[in-house]
Image (cartoon, rainbow, N blue to C red; front, side, top):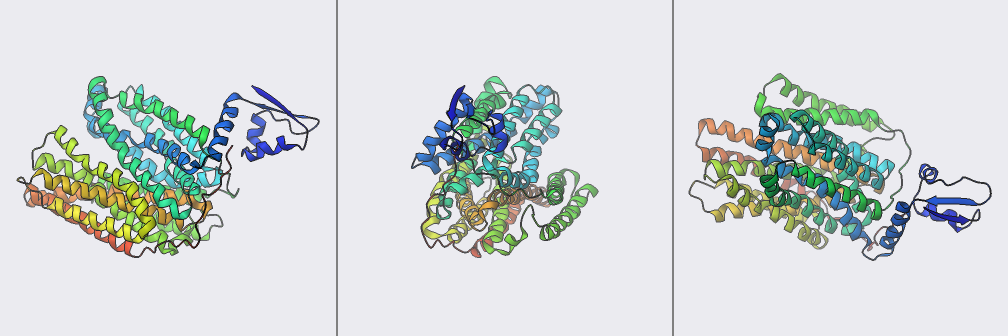
Length: 520
């Protein structure tokens, strides 16, 4: 413990204010309110944090340090999904369950992140992005450790679902901090690295996590994730900036509930449709009830003084059209992502190992292209790069539709690389456009809205393309059934192209310095 004495009204009072400490935090630190000399008692952890944060604040690379620290949390929350998916058979055998049930250990967290993301984004704007980010990553760490000791399928699913629910704010909070740290004309450049981590994390999961699972068992997925999550919390605590709290307006509970249930109904309907049938009453209820609740949400938000998501943003073309682009681009990309391994095994007879090695060409291309696209957006603008990415996505789907039992590896790998390049180009351009079109106080909720729309596109693309393939297989050959599904994906990419065409290039009259944030 370190004790420092300051006369009342001296510079020592301002130092805590500059550190971004609120009233509650001051009480926790034992700061006596008034009377005589103030005695400030700081624990060693806070002293260390203030020293490290001070160096970050003075560093010319401050924004990039914040970017790296934020992306570590994003990596932590996302790298397990691929290796967990391919390990479901082993997990089911070990826990005495079935793969069908344990699929919820993968799909459940995805649904939770899509449904709760906007609420997490609003909380980051309201209570401070750093605070919400650290709480979110801490939740991931705790329930990752709980998954290590899961004794049954329900216990594992519960740990994954709760961890994902708490971790749903990680992405919006991290994006909020990144967008605040970089000036608008540099955001696409930073978001290129966001795309790199988002696409590279699943590759890491397969390359590193796969051998660990084969050698030591599936629990090592979470044994590996837990210390990485703890490291993300510690590093985030030390270097991330205090962005301050937003206005203390009443939280929009009605809007949050309507949005959560509306998005949830649609996602559950998309998720269960292929198994239960698209005309099942539960599925139909989701497709009817979801849009109705979202329409009610839009009405409530337009009449609420302090809405969860201001409806005025949807009148801005650089907010709405990038959202449309991201929905259909993710529809195409992830629809092809889930369909192609089945094509390789069913039509070309590839083994599981060979399929995995061939398939990683797509996320590798995505992760390489993302940072490059971020730099190109600065030179050519969001619309040009978004349109380029959408065109490449169309080309990738059309190329995959040409694959037959006699096709060479060059055609398959080329198509997968095109898919990665296309999505790697679209993502930073469109996400930057959304961030540049909203007020700074709403960066968190805008990022969350983008995440939710993209996630709905992901689920829709995966389920609809699989359904088209299975229905087409009944009346045609295996090859033609996959081609039909890829044509649907290409059509979605064409819509993404049209949406990107209506995006205006963001104009920056004067170069802006990186926004100065108060760092403790």
